[in-house]
Image (cartoon, rainbow, N blue to C red; front, side, top):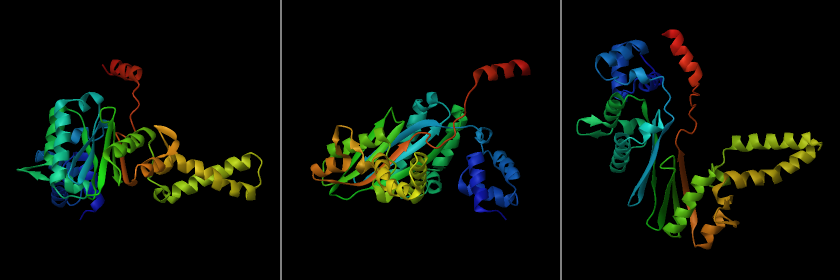
Length: 291
């Protein structure tokens, strides 16, 4: 028998589809190493040798169609490949397929069929052709109502992508908010969206800072509230100073134009991925010593 986590690990290590991984684990009594060999023997794990590489470059792409918008992040090992026409065409293809198909998870998206091939099949073939690890990392489908508009923005050629939904205002206002989101990197739309663990951590830091200044604990606790407001103005989109008019908050800018912000989505390529630090001097020396 095997666990769901075994399927996930096998997919990450081989790039094979979920169903193929399940078949391999069943055929190999749950042994992951044997399952990798099984997949490679079947010609499914073409990308297996690239499993340990780090893909932290890549591209964000956005497309809207009617009341639906899709944003994806696809990663590569190098920025050179991220600009490759075959890579960008593949990213566009993923976006188009996501708009056509009702899927909720990455696993479902990878199993979308176009003819006899899934997105994952095409991904593995592209890895084999280009010679770099390529990863379809994430996507999000955003929907709106008829009385709402999308604001979308891509920065640095797709290194950052944002989708904003605004109700009551026009697309120009929504686009301004999308640009703000790309530039100022808010982590939440408003205070309700800030995780409690982030608030607790920030409160602890503020309290320790105040006490280190010589204030007693009871005073420090009262000062936390005031200093948290500054924190919220940094991390909450609605409370940030609007970049085109710092005298206004983003919320007030939208409100002054008859609208309100409904939702915010922001992807930045490679965020959260541990990037490998290259030391070319050590690499050259290693090659000389092993020659």
